[in-house]
Image (cartoon, rainbow, N blue to C red; front, side, top):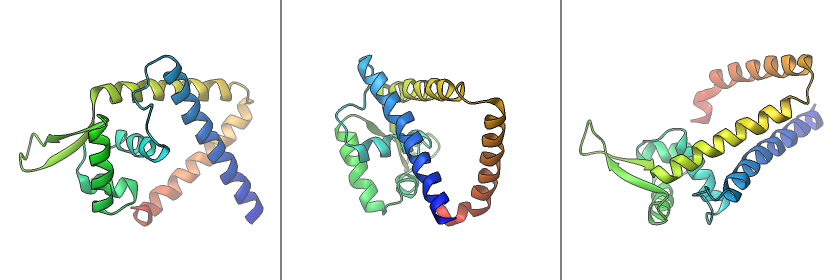
Length: 153
């Protein structure tokens, strides 16, 4: 059981890395990658924030799994590099929200499109019955994630 779980994790990580880094590389070669020059951790932060922006610093820290102070340092660095910006909340001017810059958001959209295209290329090499089984397993994993969400937040 433990060996099978390790193999599943290894393949999942390899697939994730392949999808993300392949997409970033393709967008970068096209001269459209606003993320070039960032460290792996900084890219991870930008990708994570792209899923929840605009957001508060507290929400950003929660998404990154770090303290508010650590998140503040990461955000300051990425603001300084022109990747993120701080904006006033339209509904409560006392609150400051963190969002991607327009250039980074556009780059993230192109990266997402590349990830989708790579998924399509990969899955075309799989039989329909394999896709059906994968779909069923992912559905079950989603249910487990939904049940355990509080443990991860």
